[in-house]
Structures are given as C-alpha cells and as structure tokens.
Length: 400
Picture: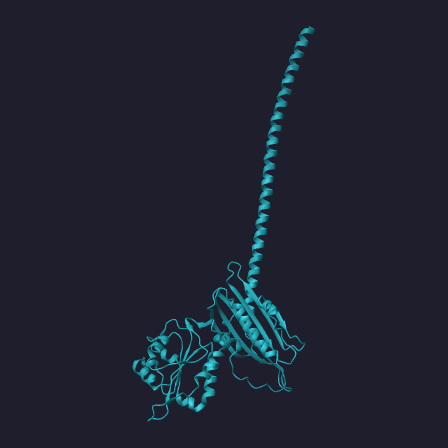
C-alpha cells in the first residue's frame, strides 16, 4: 500500500533478458548493481563504513536477509525476501526495500527515502523488474521542508539499461537509455513502430523547427538527451533534426498523427486509426507552449506523466507481495499437513472399524458354536432322561 505522506520520485516496470545463457544468474547481476549503487553512495573514502560491502553478505541478501547501519546512526536499513516455487525452481521471486535517512541541516524536517525493487523470473534467462523510489518529510515537524530533489534516474536503472549483456524491454520493444535519431528515409519504419498493435511503450517524438523562413536549418526546442534521461525505462524518445524528415512525414503519414514545427507529440500504445476520437489521446505540446514555458518545465511535465505516475504504484511487485507468496506456500503446506493427518485419522478409524467388525464376526461365530453345543447338550440330557425313565419302568416290572 502506498504511503500517503510519500512523494513519488521515480517508478518503472519492465522486462529484462540476459544474452549470457542459462549460466548467467540474472538475479545476482541485479543484486550486484544494487550493491554497487548503495556502497558507493554511502561508503565514502576516508570515512567510516556505513553499509557492508563483502560479497558474502550480499549473497545472503539474495536469499533474503537484512542490512543495518554499521554505526548506530540509523542512516540505512535494507531487507529482502526470496521465494522459489516448489513445483518450478525457475519461478523465482525476490524483492527488497531500502530505507535511507540522510543527514539533514538543522531546522529542516528529516527526509526519508525508500527504494523498493521487485524481481519476478519468467524463465531461467528473463525476469520482470519493478522499481519505485519515494521520499517523505517527517510528518508533524514544525519547521521548514527541504526543497524538492533534483530529478534524476536511479543508478541501478542506468546500469541495467546500459549493460550490453542485458536487453531491457516493455512488450516487444527494446528500451533505450539514449534518444533515437531519425533521418530522411526512416519515416516508414517509424510509422510502422507507432502503429504496431502490440506496442506497450509510449513514444515521445520531438520535431525540428525551422530557424527562419529562408533557412533550411532547424533546431530542437527541447534537448532529446535530457528528455530521455528523465523518462528512461518508461518511454522511448525519438527525434529528428532534419526538415526533410518532416516533409516525409507530412507527405506519407496519416494526417491525424503528424507532428512538425518544433512540436512534441506523445504516441500512446494501441493507436486505432479506425477510431475518430483516437488522435486526441496522443497529446501535442505546441512549439509556442514550449517556447513560453521553457525546456525545464516541459521536461518536468513528461517526467511527472511518465516516471512519477502514482496510479502505476499498485501494479509494482514489492516486499509485501513476495511475503504473500511465502505465506501462501505455508498455508498450502499446512492444509496438506491437515489433510494428511485427517487421512491418517480416517485410516486409523477404518482399521478400528475393521478390527471391531472382525471381533464381532468372531463373537457371532463363537455364539453360534455355543448355541450348537448347548443344543447338543440339551439333546443329550433329553436322551438321558428317556433312558432313566425306561430303566425305572423295567425296575418296576422286576419288583412285581
């Protein structure tokens, strides 16, 4: 659940795939990137070590453990949770939560940063990554709050996007940390990318603006590199510096999806050219608006829309979600145990019933034998009485 006091700084969710084969431990590669980021940030040369950097400790972190500030200053706390499906060892889920409490200037509210990273393996060589960074100022503090932090992309995200042995993607489209330049002749391929039915990643296109009416030179009103830096892992940035590319787009392209004159357009996924209302979903930012408010404001707009979308938060895989998987396994094991015990109790009861039935049959057999024996004894007694009576009659005759 989202902390209502927290401000979203960055979020992303994308797929990664290693090109190194099944021997490449993708989760361990992610953890090494986390280790590199946090130890370089906190363990300054010449200062006491803040967080453990030994690989042995980080291997424990891979399997689920905790890190604490090595000094009693409460500047860092990290915990991780590991889950592996019993029926499929390749289905590994892992998540960590890193809480940072940097030193703050006297008189300002303490600020807490929380980084949550989720990993869900989809195969031996691929996984889905969730990444969210939030910050919050101490609630109830009477005093000033520090200024909003400068926008940036987490170093772990940069490392993944720049790693030549890892392919990062959203849907079928590979992500790029750098903007993609379009030259004359590239429009058909660009339009095909825009209209792909399975595209899941937003595309931001920056069109060139003619410098003056007589010149064939053009300029961009927003630096594509700066924009790409701020929406990395959430969108792809395309741009062209050629007016010939604009002519190509205007001549060959669908009139509802054009962009020119220095404007910027966001092409959302799943363009539907058969829907008359669809073009309105792919937002224009006009050149006049960009010139009025400036590059910095425009980049802030895109970062907020792409990399700080709070509605996206609940779809991210986090520590609590990983714990739910573990608890589900525990419940399943408990249910299986109860069923096993119940089956054992039923089996024992059946054995007792069978034993009782056998004893009953034995008793009934003995009763029948005793009845037969009793009938035989009665018959013998009757015969004896008859013989006694006969002997008495004979004795009476001899007495006469």
